[in-house]
Amino acid sequence: MSSISIIGLGNMAGALAGRALAGGNAVEIIGRDPAKAKELADALGGATVGTAGAPLVGDIVVLAVPYAGAAAVVSEYGDALQGKVIIDITNPVSPDFQGFVTPAGSSGAQEIAKAAPVGAHVVKAFNTVFSHVLAAGPAGGRPLDVFIAGDDAQAKTRVSAFIESLGLRPMDIGELPMARALENVGLLELGLITHSVKHTNFSLGVTILN
Image 1: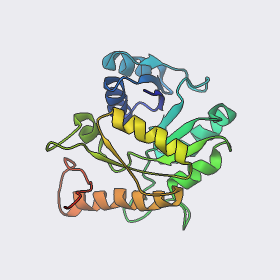
Image 2 (image 1 turned 30 degrees about the horizontal axis):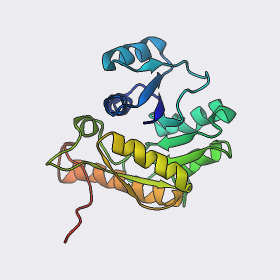
Image 3 (image 1 turned 60 degrees about the vertical axis):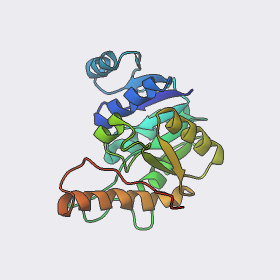
């Protein structure tokens, strides 16, 4: 099992922490508001509370914060992230939901990787799964698919093992530049919510045909 530090106190942070604890992982919750961090940890049961800016306990660090602040968080921790696997779950979508706020030809994950120390490895994951769907777990008798992208094979292996501990299925789509494709899937989901499905009670996955 893994040791996980989750930076953030929102719905995705809570959903990931809950499934991680259920999967036998050690979980540290970190937020700018210590009272809210303690409240979330107490509600989950079994999680510890870290201090923002203090050394991170987890070998895997989940950035469960809005994209606008993600690179700043990574820069703040700096060399404390050496040797860590950083999971980027963000969707850097523009306010009009028509594109992205990242530079042309780049992705949120790649921009976050630029802010990370050389010895840290960024893996894109979980950005295509809604928090309440993640919290509910397997649906229709099959595990949810979690698509991942990253440059370091060992880091992806560790993230895949973590995903499996949550009762989910990791699906490797390639190196970190493929995070752009995953962020486009996040944008696609927003389009489905607006124009077709009209709600967020769905997930996207792969069905292998015989």
